[in-house]
Amino acid sequence: MLSSILRNILNKETVLIIGAAGNNGVATIESLVNKNISKYRVRAAVRSQEKAQNLQNRFPEIETVIIDLDKPETLTAAYKNVTKVFMIPGNVENRQQHSENAVDAAVAAGTVKQFVYYSVVGAEYEAILFGKQFRAGEKYLEASGLNWTHLRTIFFQDNFHGWAEGIKQGGLYFGIREGQFAPLNVADIGEMAANLLTTDGHQHKAYNVTGPELLSGQDMADVFTDVTGKTVSYVSPSTEDTLDSLLNTGWPEWQAKGMLELFEVFATNQAAMVSPDGELLMGRPMTKMKDYIAANKTAFI
Image 1 (spheres, rainbow, N blue to C red):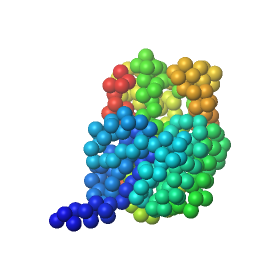
Image 2: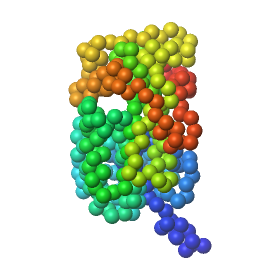
Image 3: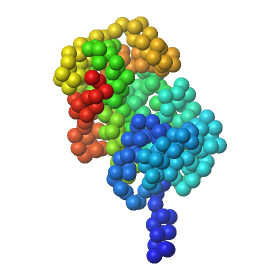
Image 4: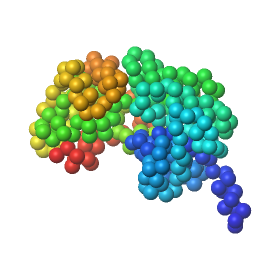
């Protein structure tokens, strides 16, 4: 009996999630745990003991490890016996260097069979700051010799919690003029990532994932009106006002300016598409924005 238990433990594949404490990381862990896949051991890499403990409290089944992506030497232990990696680069200006450090560590480990890289829709065009940052990581991974998969995502439905105060006051202040895009649900992203990590056939593929429906700013305001039962008007502020608002709420200047570039992509309908990739990866319909807002209604009233 004991030898059988030890054999099962040794035969488990170890999945390393880098950036595990963020919303996408937590969603991925939750999906992996809910799948109850006995073949896999989940190892969550985070930046502090506090974050590690919070994850351990929420998911007792997983392992945690402390890393610092600015210090490559801290990655060696995290990669021990790792067979699959999901990296979610943080909201930092040196995303490229962090990505390169993580890829180098995967190569050095010699055990990694698949490296799933979280990225953004349109990264291949390298047209805006966020696209350039993530595409640099993609290209470095592609050149590494590892089996790679890119999971490219778009602006989240969940991000509208950051606009909640305005919505409570009756206004969605969102600077995309008359443009449209398809907001994506974070829990859906977690499920996609979990499926990528636990199924075959994804090597050397890039998945561009959007939400299930194109929405304008007015459409989104109408969703909030329908769900909350009070009128929410759509207002598209000027670029200057949007920048001031982001800076005043604590956004670093580089990130705020990057967001303005993204809003301009939305405003000019350069991202006005609905991709089938998400539904393909999940095997079910994507979550609509109205359903997400209804499930989180208390945050907006």
